[in-house]
Image (cartoon, rainbow, N blue to C red; front, top):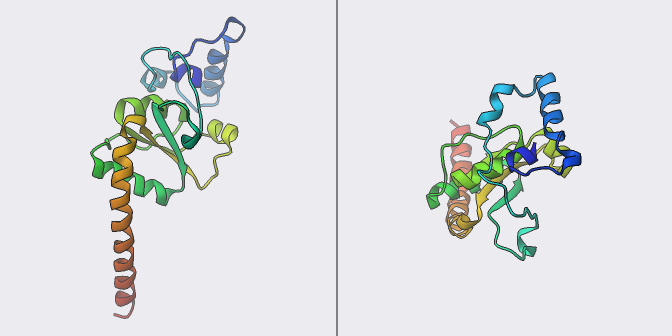
Length: 168
């Protein structure tokens, strides 16, 4: 599916793989043929696709995938809203690979992580992805500092209120 969503033509020896994979997904009832045209897809084939831990990247990333637990995704989502880079795209299910072109178009995307991605990457059952465009990373980082501090204060407040309300 990644070759399809990333608009990457496969070499002749492998060009039938996308059709085979789609056929299997259709046969399993996992995906319907009418859904395929609606899957986010890169508009043109990329020159290259490179993955790297952000701190080790020797290139400017187009998108950043953050594998995280839901509480961290909440903070990132709030920071994206605060930074003005969030959108109304709902959390995405399968396939995970469509979240990359969706984030390039929309700004940020929450991906629940499909079983294929989880199997290939080892993403934990308690994790999901928050994806942000590379050009928005600085704005997200600045907002994350404010949102994190606000959440710490709000947590203290809510825990105090919970204790108060428990005695009523």
